[in-house]
Image (cartoon, rainbow, N blue to C red):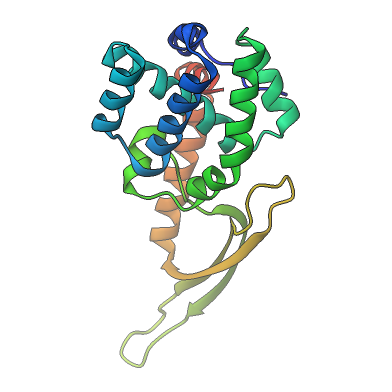
Length: 217
């Protein structure tokens, strides 16, 4: 499996055919910096002046490269699948070598960023540090009555939500840390949460969501 870029991103990367390997390396480094540290207009302007290119052209290339590296790293593509992704772009062999070297150097760093995303990168690529669901355990306790209230039946629920998050990066066999989140809820709160989740599951099956999912993939 390899990453298939959309036509818009492919068009943005077409101009790299006119770049030398050293110039492409500079653009790749700016792209990695954009993912890790956020936008740096001065650096883009400096590279554009050095390469004698329009600033808007360099900015477009850097953003397209940022998308390429971030999506491949987020999918945790091994080098073999990353190679197929690059081949699909129909770039020169020199450009392929630059891409491979940059990906090899920075994929572990990018993987860590995607798990421990901060506010600088979150708005750019939708990076999420949300833990992954593993299991849910629950226990119900029923309060039958009180001294001043007869014939009272009041259920209480104790929930243990089990999640996992990645703590090792850069390999196909990443280590996960298991977490336990304990919560208490009454019946009407739990019923409301169940209804909302049920509506969300129904929404996933709509044509609108399917179109968005196909676009993202």
